[in-house]
Amino acid sequence: MSTHTTPARADAAPVQAAAAAADQTGAATTPADAVTGSAGTARGAATAPAAPVRASAPAAEPALEPAPGADGDEPARAADPAGAERVPAPGARPGVPGRRPARGAALGRWLRAAALRSAALLALIALWETAPRLGLVDATFLPPASEVAKAWWGLLLDGQLGEHTRASLVRSFGGFGIAVVVAVPLGLLIGWYRPVAALLGPLLEVFRNTAALALLPVFVLLLGIGETSKVSIVVYACVWPILLNTISAVGNADPTLVKLARSMDLSTPRLFQKVILPSSVPAIFTGIRLAGAVSILVLVAAEMIGAKAGLGYLINASQFNFAIPEMYAGIVTISAIGVAFNQLLVTIERRLSVWRVPA
Image 1 (tube, rainbow, N blue to C red):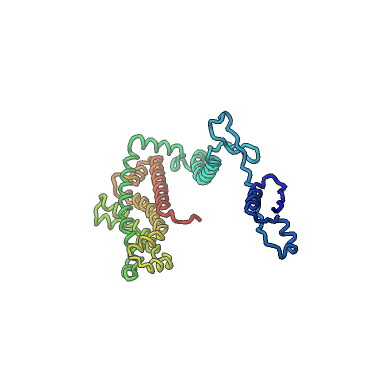
Image 2 (tube, one colour):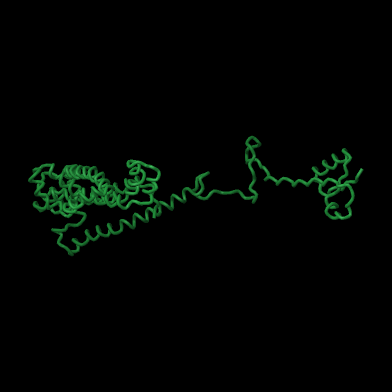
């Protein structure tokens, strides 16, 4: 029976087991170092099977320590290899590291942006308040902002401001909605089909260069002095920004995307749905936002000429009655409505163009 080399380490149990099995079968085994060190001297002898490779000891797992106060009832948790317990950051929720600091940073950025945007407006209000009081301008024709605010609050309490604002919004939003419904499909049609653009192009150039207020007497003569003429003049004024921006958006669609869509045999409705409309949303909404501002401005001018209610009528009547603070209150109300309406349109545009990569 061959002699066996006893391993120096005590954890070589697999090697000893393999050696014992070899002794029982009568096969001669050669230690690994003798095979590698004296390969030349073993020439001519019977080839002995190589010693089994020593299996590496499994990596030591981190020691398990019971949770404080558990007394073995709860499962043990792995100890930190560094030996130090990890403490969550101040203000962070368990399981959500860094959430509150991130929210705090976002809130700080929002506050800084809001302060930057409102700085010029606050400076204007401060100048408006101090200039009449310091005698820089005549307070009779430009009263301080505080007096205008008092007049605005008085009009709100007695119901006049609400009545005139409601009348103006109904006319303005009604004409604006009709213009959007008419101008967007017509712009898509003219922008996509070149024969239609060639046919209607000269006519569009004539009317879009004619001011809406210049046609107000025509609308009054044809439609009367009631609500129809006012809504019609708003529709006419709002159609052109939307129509022209829609035509431009369709004409500037990416030709590569259009060719790819056509190579996939998409029908014209699907091509408009998947390619033309998504790429045209920013330009179309630019025209819609311009039309929103135009709708209020044109309506106020129309109400100054012939109306019994509305913000334009309020401004004109206050001027004739020399109620200067009330006149400025109506002007401020129109400005606030325009800003709020524009912000609403910006929000809708962001909702419809979530696919755009922010710059």
